[in-house]
Length: 399
Image (tube, rainbow, N blue to C red; front, side):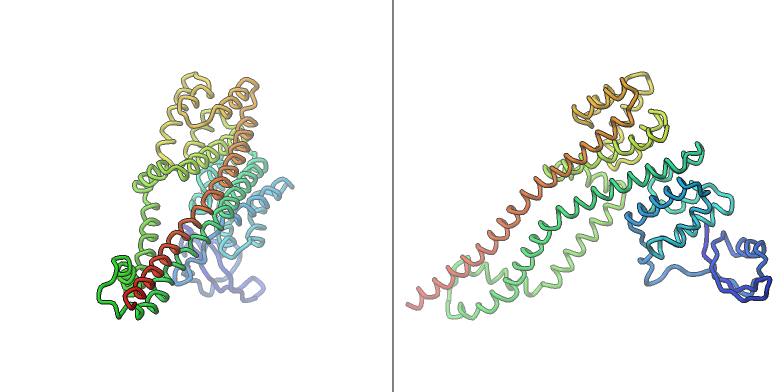
């Protein structure tokens, strides 16, 4: 495993320098420095763990930007080593610069780019690493990385539009929660003195006061419970077995299920378009594209389709049996098979799926917004009506 070392050394001219080097152990680091004609004065491993370890996160947009830059450099005739060295200096963040620095050091030491990328599966997904491996073996680095950059830009654009569509409904939901929390913590307790003269309270008034007492007395507990549930869901999602169970549940929810299925289709068709454009065979493209999916159920269905293709069946018929794509997508794929332009067909299917997904998101948010407002209005309105009825009942008793 590559480690980061900080060293102090003397150059051939006697100049004292302090720099960093990436190597597999201190012995290897000293050997690399010796080859550079440096006299090592001190060297120690740089500890990257600690309180601010979370700063090492690298965004997908930063990876897309670097990939686009790498493709441009390779298209202009630079060798992969020189291109990686430039990425170290021009990375969008220090964390990404360290990633490219390690990859550059690995490639300089004689390892393949694929082997260097394997050290960062959290930053470079399976498709990215496999495409880099194919590009190295076929000598098509510039075109493959250009396709990868375009694919990452496509995925990033889709993710950005999804987040933008969900921002407003989430704001409404948060306002609803805060409003209810404020009513039970501040408004109702201040009105409780109005009901002290009553010997017997109406059941709705008693319920309102009891609920207010519970919320105000357990505010921190309720907040902690919400945080705990969120953390539990995050932990379960990161475990393969429970994630698949959650995915089955999500697919059963009317709106969420449709969004998930469409996202899976986009992931598969974009991977097929990318791999076919890079010159892979149909079977190899299917094998790699299936691995990019999230749901095991979808993987199993498409694996059966791949086996049928390997046995001589047409791709469109095999995919039709899996019920993974709609009829229009299958028709486009059938045309691509007959004309020998499957990569363009999958690119067209991806574009159509993206447009359908965006249209679906607009419809969903258009429905969510009034629904959340209705729920918030219903809850707040119910509390207000109960308060008014309670006040009226007090006045009736006093009369």
